[in-house]
Each structure stands twice: as C-alpha cells, then as structure tokens.
Length: 359
Image (cartoon, rainbow, N blue to C red; front, side, top):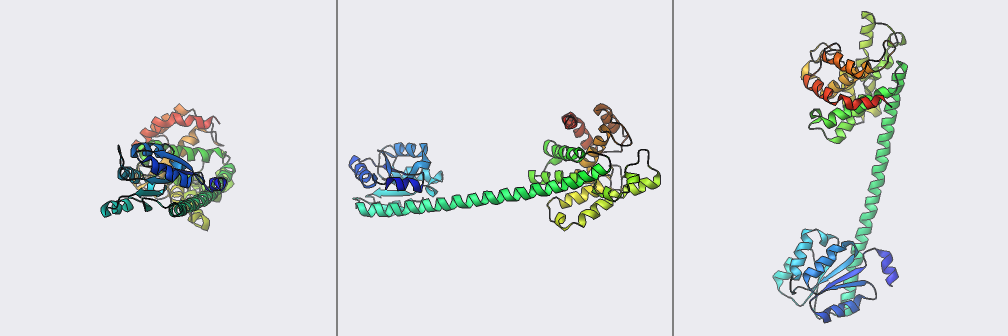
C-alpha cells in the first residue's frame, strides 16, 4: 500500500501538530501504514517543519489549542502564504466555537474533525481529500505541460516566419551585391537602440522584437528595381535615382500583397519602415517628405543604421570607410540630417556595434 501511495505523488507525509502526545500517537497509528508521518507538539514547530519541506506534505492535521503558537495562528500564516491552496489542512479539535470554525473554513480548512477521532472515519475523510488534491495537481501539471508545448510550437512558427522573412530580405540584398549580414546588422542595431536607450521608452520587449524584425524588411522594394540601376558601380543619373527611390513605395506595396505578412504583429512596423526609412529630419527625404517627429522613431533608427552600415561596408560603388570616418561624415551632415537626440545616442552606442562587422 505504501509503495502505491508513493507512486501517486511525491507528497506522502502527514504532518500531525498537537500538543497532546497521546493524540499525536493515535493519529500516527491511523496513517502510518499509508503515509510517512511527522509530528510537532506546538504550532511554531509544526509551521517550521511544513515550511522546510512544503512539497512533501500530503496533509496537515492541526489542533487549535496549543502553546507557543495556536492552530488558528498557524492557519492564518499558511493562508497568507497561499499554502492552503496546495496543502489540505484539517482541524482535529474539540473546539466547537462557531466563530472559530467559521474563520477556519474562510482560511481554507478542508474539514473539521472532532475529537475523539474515529479511526476509519478520519482515514476515509482525509484520504478522499488528499486524493482530490493529487488529482487536481496532476491535472494542473498536464495543463502546464500542454501549455508549454503550445508555446514551444508557437515559438517555432515565429522562428520559421522570421527565417522566411530573413531569407527573402537576404536574397534581395544578394541581388544588389550585398551580403545577408546587412539585414542582420540592421536588426541588431535597431534592437539595441530601442532596448538600451531612451528611444525605446514605453515599448515592451515584444514590441521591440517586432520592430527589429520589421527592420530586416526595409529594402524589400528593391526587388522591383532593374539590375542595371541596382548594381550600377557609378553615380546614378537623376532619372535612375528617381527609379531607385521608388523602392520605398514598392516595398510597402509588396508587403501588402502578402496575406500571411499582414497577419504578423510586425506588419505595421514593416510597412512604415519600408516606406519611410529614407525620410529625413529636415523634410528633404522621400517618398512623402515627412519632417521631424512626423517620422516614427523606428523608421528614424533604421534610416541612421542603414546609412552607417552602408558607409562602413564595401559596396559595388565604393570601398568601406572606417567607423570613425563614417561617424564624422554622419555628424557633419554629409549623409543627410538626423534627429539630434537620435544622433547623440547613436554616437554614444556606436562602439558596441563595431563587433557586428568582425564576424
């Protein structure tokens, strides 16, 4: 019988708290064939034993009138700690005061068994409740296991979506003669700026993840740009530059045409970034001529990160600049005008980005 009880759950100890030794021995004799037993002669000792190993306690048998700490005080502490939700508590007492019993039930006592106890009655009542608690815990464990499986599957779907998005974006970067590392760097820089600076204030971690994923898709519209313009080694003519500029509008239109993309939490950020990552703080950007705070902070960050990455990376039309020279060019306005706060924070964090170019 004892082996069977052990298989049903790890909590297999009955804790008996009573200041009367005879009562303790009687209760121990009733349950010793089915459970391990622990005994305490006052409430303080009993509470200490329970708190030392709460997961091992199958049930607490608690007298009310005891020295040092009485049963009601023990019960109040257990209720405050939330332990009456996980450990069934039984009052074994001669106390019959209605107000006391009413409070005991309000604090989570499962049953009140009056002294002197009848062995087969007390055994049946306590075993039934213990089995109920074990069944409830088993069900809760199964629910938690299923929950974890569902969360794992959801994460796999998220990872798959991100992998597909990154693959698409990387393919476009390869088409323009750039490596897939470009989109990963923009992801990392965007995430860093939103996580470690005041620019991300008010954004939770999940939103920052969505924005960082969206940054990967900033140049998807380049798929619509002819190779002759996209990979031209020299300066573009004004006419060619006008065609190149359309990749912003082409990008957001492309994203709109993918039904699965519109279901992603990152879609709105991706649309905004694809369309507006070439807008400028002074209003001289494209395609909409947005100015200042009309441009979302995430589009501003991707814009600056994109410029920085272009400067420090080798492209078909230029060699790579050093990080210090690239920063100087950005600060001197050679690459457009940026939000002063964004620029200040970017310069402060820039050295942390250099490791991205050593992989």
